[in-house]
Image 1: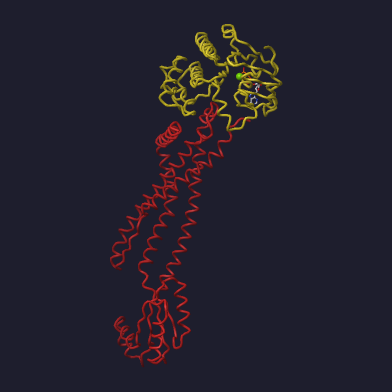
Image 2 (image 1 turned 60 degrees about the vertical axis):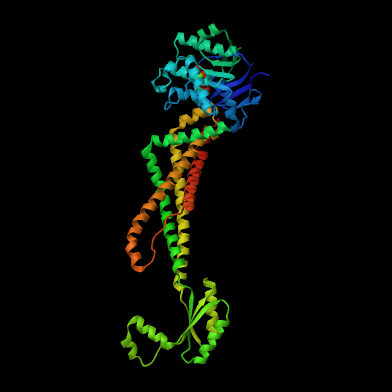
Amino acid sequence: MSQIALSNVSKRYPGGHEALNGVSLAIETGEMVFITGHSGAGKSTLLKLIAAIERPTSGSVVVNGQNVGSLRARGIPFLRRNFGLVFQDHKLLFERSVFDNVMLPLDITGFDRREGARRARAALDKVGLLHKEKARPITLSGGEQQRLCIARAIVHRPSILLADEPTGNLDAGYAADIGELFRDFNRVGVTVVLATHDTQLAARLQPRQVEIRGGRVHHD
Amino acid sequence: MTSWLAAHRRACSGTLARLLRAPLASLFNIAVIGTALALPLGFYVVLASLQGLARDYSPQPQLSLFLAPEASAAEARAIGERLKARSGISASRFVPRAAALETLKARTGLDDIIAGLPGNPLPDAWVVTAAGADAATLDGLRGEFRQWPKVAEVHVDSDWARRLDQLLGLGRHAVLLLATALAFALVAVTFNTIRLQILTQRDEIEVAKLIGATDGWIRRPFLYFGAITGTAGGAAAWLMVWAVLALFNDRLQPLAALYGLPLQLAHLDAGDSLTLLVFAAALGWFGAWLSVRRHLGAYNPR
Ligand SMILES: Nc1ncnc2c1ncn2[C@@H]1O[C@H](COP(=O)(O)OP(=O)(O)OP(=O)(O)O)[C@@H](O)[C@H]1O
Ligand SMILES: [Mg+2]
C-alpha cells in the first residue's frame, strides 16, 4: 500500500474556483517527488490536502492507511506530526526567537526540553542558522526565513517532508545546499514531496516529477 | 507521566511569564476581578460578624406572663405550680406588682410621677425562661400561656434577636444574589480577556495547530491564565476586605468600649479564605474554558 494515495481528488474552494479536478497519485515510502506546474495550478492545494489543512470536495486522500479527508478533528494533530511542513509563506512566529520557533514542534509533543534543545540546534546548524538562534525572525532575510522554516520542519524527524517552494527565495548556492539536505533525508528513508518551480534543483536531484495542469495530473 | 507533568509546568510558567510581560494590564485585570469579588465578600464578612453578635448577645429567651389585675395571690401561686410542672421551662420567677413598681422607680427616676398615680398600674407577672430558644418553641409557649386563666398578656422578650436573625437571613440571600451576579462578572471578564488574547495570538495558534498541536495543548495556557488571574483576583479581594476591616475596626473601637460589646468585624478564617481562592480560581478557569471553546473552533480545516 502506498504511503500517500490520492484517488480522483477534486477541490473546489468556497469561492467556486476548482483548484483540482480528479487527481490520482500514489507516493511510496521513501520516494522523492517533485510537484510542478504553473502558478495557480494547484500545487499548494495538493500538499494542503495531504496534510489535512484543506479537505477534498470529492475523492479520497489516504496517508499511512488513514483517510485524511474524513479524519475527525481530534485525530488531525496526530496525523500532522508525521509531516515536516515547509510553508510557502513560512508561517514563522515573529514574537519568538529563532530557537523557540524551531523548538515549537518538539514542545507541542511534550519532548524532553534538554534533548529538544540539542536537536533544535542541530537542525539550525544544518540550515546554517545556528549563529542566529537568539535573533527574531523579523530580522532575518527572506532566504534565512525560508531556511528557518525548513529547520522547524525537520527538527522532529518526520517520516514525510512536505515542502512548498522551499527554495523560492534562495540563491543558487543555498538552494543547492537545501537540495542536498532533502536528498540526505530521503536517503535515510524520509518521503519527500516538494512543490517547486526550481528546474535546476530538479535537474540536480533527478526526482520523480508530477506536473499538474488544468487541475489534473498532466505528466508523471 | 513525567512529560505530561513537565508540559503542565511549562504551560504554567509560560502563563506567569506572559502575565509579567504585561504587568500593567495584568494588574488592572486582577484589580477588576478583585473588586468584583470584594463586594460580596465584604458583605459576607459583616453579616457573619453580626450573626455571631446576635447569637452571643441575645439574652436567654424569656417570656413575661402578665396576670389579670383581679388575679388573687392564690391564683398567681397556682400559675407558678403549673409552670413548675410544665416541661420545656428551665426557670420561672414571680415578680409581684409592688416589686415591679419599685424597680421602675429605681430604673427611671420617675418617682414624682409614679407617686402621683392613684394606685399601682402594674400587674403581677411571672418571668419564664424557656429551655428552647427557637422561634417555634417560643411561639408555642406564648400561645399556650395565653389560654391559661388569669393570664392577661404574654411577652416574648427576645423578639429583637429574632428580628435581627430574620434580617440577617435576608442579608444572606442578598449576599448570595450579589455573589452570583459578580461571579458572572468574573467569568465575563476572563472570557473577554481570553478572547482578546486569542485574537492577538492568532498566528501562534494557527501555526501550532498546523504542525500538530492538540486543542488541549493550545487550550492549556489560556486555562492556566484564567485560573491564575482568578486566584490573584481572589487574593486581591481578600486584601481589600482586610484593609477595609482594619480601618473600620479602628473606628469601631471607641464605640465598642462605650457599649461594652466586642464590636469587631472578623475576617475570613483560614478555611474560608482557601475556599474563596479555590472558588475564584474555578471561576477564572471556567471563563477561560468557555472563551477558548467558543473561539478556537475557527482553526479547523474546512
Ligand atoms: N483559500 C483559497 N480560497 C479560494 N481560492 C484559493 C484558495 N487557495 C488557493 N486558491 C485558488 O486555487 C488555485 C490553486 O492555488 P494553489 O495555491 O494551489 O496554486 P499553486 O500551484 O500553489 O500556485 P503557486 O505556484 O503560485 O504557489 C488558485 O487559482 C488559487 O487562486
Ligand atoms: Mg503554491
